[in-house]
Amino acid sequence: MRRPLLAAALLLLTPIAFAQAYKWTDSHGTVHYSETPPAQGTRFQKVATTGTAEPLSKPAAPEQVPASSPASGPVADTPENRSKLCTSLKMNMDALNAKGPVVMETNGRQQALDDNQRQQQLASANMDYQRYCVPR
Image (cartoon, rainbow, N blue to C red; front, top):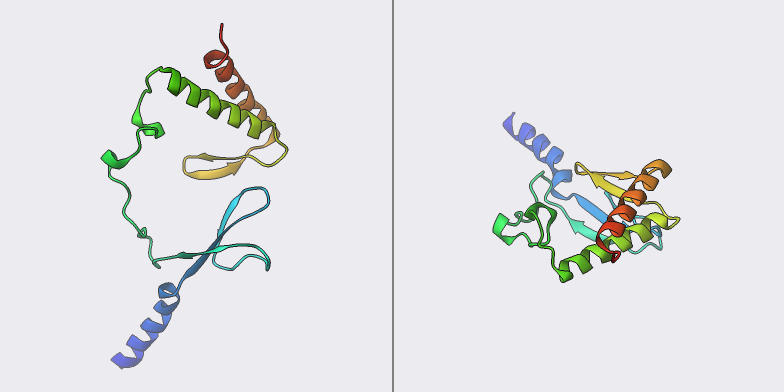
């Protein structure tokens, strides 16, 4: 009785052990992950999975997080930092002005911006650009 029960349990767990995921980028620059490969002719990568909710590698310890991460606190107002900010704001405005879809991550979830949200983000980026990047 125990052997058939054990065999059934192993058969049910087999797909988890051999889980396969695929990663590819579409023509709009959006990265996709799927359990099935993309359409033929699309370049993709096979992604190793663990079959569990555990990550493949441990997250970086707080002391290993780069200083440029958003959670690192205030940034000194230096010409180099201001230049980086202005470059980033300019790239954001260019992306918001482009015709392709714009995807933002909010609370860990990705969401495509509608026209109203896009205009709000563009106005905010433009205001920051005028404030920090245009000489007075």
